[in-house]
Amino acid sequence: MGWSARIAIGVLVLLFLAAGALAIYAGTLSPPHRTYQQILSNDRFPS
Image (tube, rainbow, N blue to C red; front, side, top):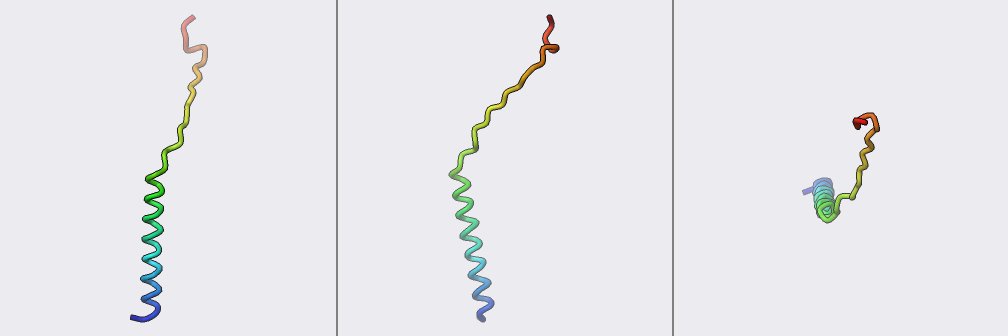
């Protein structure tokens, strides 16, 4: 096995480790809590 194949395998291993670390990190995050407010105009209410 030549040096180019070893370097390619090393890069692939690092990519898989980084992808796994990002997946674990993303699994621990909670989604941000957002509140929405809907404003109704006065012409929708009968007077």
